[in-house]
Image 1 (cartoon, rainbow over the protein chains, first blue to last red):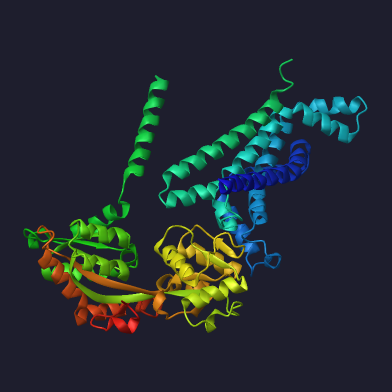
Image 2 (cartoon, each protein chain N blue to C red; image 1 turned 60 degrees about the horizontal axis):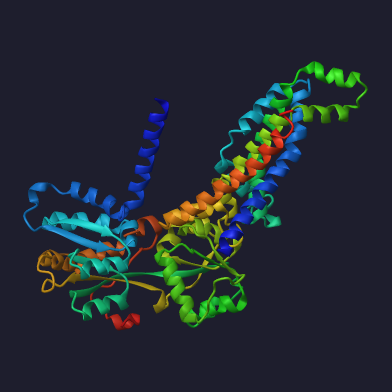
Length: 214
Length: 303
């Protein structure tokens, strides 16, 4: 029982961490791509949108090659650690958050920017107000990012190694129990995973909808 | 309308899941087909089906794919292979559900013979497990007297050991060796469990510079991608010894005893032993199984 608790806690830590990191990087980049007018913007957006469909196993392979003992980042000894999984999941969630942020801000009426600036707001205040305005789709971007990593198994297996007590997360534990023919346990873990995903999304949805019904 | 079709889809899906969950012998079913197709039905006469219960290792290595067609062609017997764990293979013999067994658990086999379930038993071949580890061997297991000593050295040094931890035969042997060493490794900080197959486990051990127990065949297949070396081998407790056993017809008159005896003689005759000894040489540079028919079992420290 304590092992299941530990696996669940680790899954949450890793995926929440990866999602927050992708928010930290994806929100500014997505804002820039969504609001900016510069050459190469469409090209960058197309890259990010392709990244939204990046298969987790491809990310896993990439991170594994980088982190292997003989790889370029091998000296940090990160392969088969939770940090390696966070890195991989960050790479999976980051394009999702960035792309959806760009889409959310790009959908705002561009005259809104000029109006806010015209009322004497600074550039940072303007961006803050735009984020508030696009609160609904931005939280949806966050949920999509979290959903893409908490449910992901390929990269976690490849760069984490499913090591008991260290890098075994809910999805890799489900794969293991299924391969052992322990379908009951596999179903129980699946139910747990779905429940957690539901609770987190419920919380985010409540935040999202808090101020909409006035 | 839409609701109706959705419900139908859901039910169908659940039924599919149910079928998957209920299939007790996924291996067995897969293995029956190629053999029943490869033999022309004209040579088959009544009482000629021979049920062979064996372990997954002989099946997975591809050895049976080489040995069975020759036997079937020569004798006309239709061999139905059921690849299961050794425990289950012996139980099939006890219940008269198999005619001949090819298994690798000497202690249980002797009980099986003593209780009169088997008629003849012959030494066929062996392969072995090896202990792999980083070349510098931090625990110094290459100087161990026996396998138990090697495991004790790993525990004593607190060197990282990567276990399969997945309920496989290799994992069962590893647990047995820890028991012989008088050590309970679970929950030790240096004891890791991958919960994955042998190949994935080897790749993780490679990165972690960990010790691990591996069957020689898988090691040979992965050797090109590994810097891990065989640090301990050739110990009687690491042997994986295969015997062929015919099920006693006095207990189960229905069994195909003549066919079983023909199979025993086929496996132990010199020409077949030569095939076993050369199997895998072309692909891996050394054989996966060492033929042992007629050898003195005491030499191997066997009961």
